[in-house]
Image (cartoon, rainbow, N blue to C red; front, top):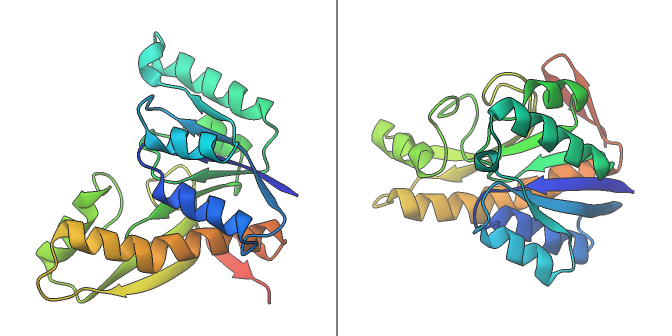
Length: 208
């Protein structure tokens, strides 16, 4: 059984997709050990509690330094003995010591087709604003492992979404979530839970 921690800062729509996948058995061999948020007002915490999942808030604002937060964050995460950390809209820089300890065991969802519209400054609506400003015709979402860079880890899955005439950043954001994010994040977790994902350098291999 794959034990996962889901880290989220906001409403938790990707968290809901994961919960639904587990309950509907499209994600198999997986349980959510804990939901962690840096935001005490995040609706994601309520989503977790409604489904009987432990939910905790760990905010950098409560610590004297970022180093103290990083140390306690890792300590508390270790206490749940999770196999995989899932970043589902978690707006906190992941400590390097955590990346090292959980090498190829932290995954993130990004709302574009990496390497386009990613990296420092590209998050939330800013991604979709960039897509529309550039006039591209196809965008999408990417699930990738987390490394020391920003959106530079090995890519697990991607799904394309058409950009339509008249799209606003908000409309495009919703379509990318519905057509891509909520599909490939649960799929990636299921593949990992069933031992179908291996990593060689920057390349992810998925077995049939």
